[in-house]
Length: 56
Image (cartoon, rainbow, N blue to C red):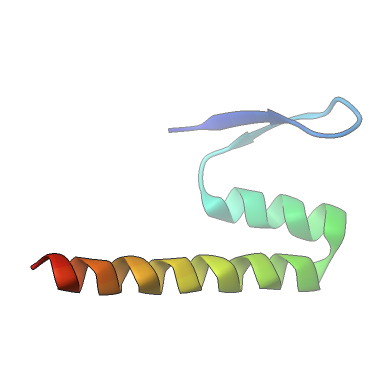
């Protein structure tokens, strides 16, 4: 489900996925910040997968 956010300065952006958010991070904070965000998302996904294994 899309999410609409307002950036500092009043610009409106619509996010359809975490990729869209990572793009905004890269545009406004740089590649390293976006790379850090992507690594956090990857780590979160790993925790979710491990949790699913325990639920079975």
